Amino acid sequence: MAATQRIAVGAMVAAACATSLAGCAAGSPGTKEGAPGPRKGAPAPGSVVRLIGDGSTAYTGAQPHLPVPERLKPGEKPPQFVVFSWDGAGEDSQKLFSHFRKVAKENHATMTYFLSGVYMLPEDKRDLYRPPQHAPGSSEIGFNDQQGIADTLKQVRLAWLEGNEIGTHFNGHFCGTDGGVGQWSVKEWKSEIAQAKQFVKTWKTNTGMTKAPALPFDYDKELIGARTPCLEGQKNFRKAATELGLRYDSSGVNHQLWPQKREGLWDVSMQLVPFPGHDYEQLTMDYNFMVNQSGTQTQGDPDKFDYWGDQMRDGLLKGFYRAYDGNRAPLVIGNHFESWNGGTYMRALDDVVKQVCNKPEVRCVSFHQLVDWLDAQDPQTLAKLRTLKVGEAPRQGWASLLSGRPAPAPKGVPGAPALKQ
Image (cartoon, rainbow, N blue to C red; front, top):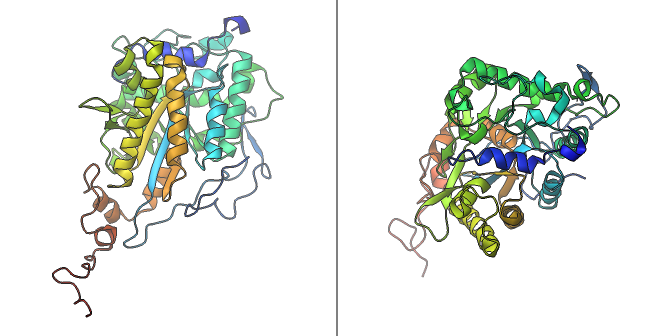
């Protein structure tokens, strides 16, 4: 579309999110002490370049800064994983993609960016998109213009080279009962997934930007997971994703418990955390905090902006410490690049990243890194971790829980070695 008609990505998502109250899923990082480093033996980025298809993507070797997963040693306390993920990731005039890349690098974090395929498709090629149960060229979040595509490509390219993950938020963001994703069949989900990949793999052909550098990854291999629009359609999406070889799904609502596999996919859904000032818990997503503060109005009472942002920040921190001091279940947080209620939720996320990602034994990672780690663990170890309730630390310590033998009793209690006189 023309530059003057361009729809900001944040505005696109805001409009789509307002259709659902159930939850909208609309340099190099430093290596922290105790965190594994880059994969050994990986070729330097750019030293191996094999263009794929029309040159929109390329194989450039193993992803830089992707840690080698390590199995927990017997009795070892698990790290506290935190995943920050972004729905419909794209760079617009707000420049929040580039902002959070910078925040991540400064705080030893990597993140997951769920790219919307239509952000790679120019308005004049919209009819290439054939959404299930909708007319060709339909989309609830619009399409993009040349500058928007170029800006998003730059951020996606740099994000991947910094060790971040590029997932998908699919394409048209259709929610509700009128042909929304919740009504799609397994076959229709497969079509949507294939098109999301295709738009990323053919942006050069579709935009004419043939001299721009390729994205440095094979998207057929890079894409291993997703979050569905408005958290709808999960059942048939999972069936399609399993058959297509994806590895995880983050489309549900969970408590702060250790993940398990469902239908062959790791269920790494967002979670419920304390909601300060309320007697109920709240999903770890900006949209849901907004709905419970200002309703579907994306710009409510300005006098409450700071309070609302603090409420979200404090709720996420309460959830973090509940896990960090308790069962160590990974904390999964989902957001959008948006300016709702004066941008207060983005400021809250800044604070959360800075406060949690630099703590001992904390790893702020992408879903890719998290499921790599889960796959590397002894299944019996994971089964033991899943016996812990929300916020529950092992009563006899981690060594007792994860070693298979009881921890030694402290001195001075029944059964302990006698105290020396």
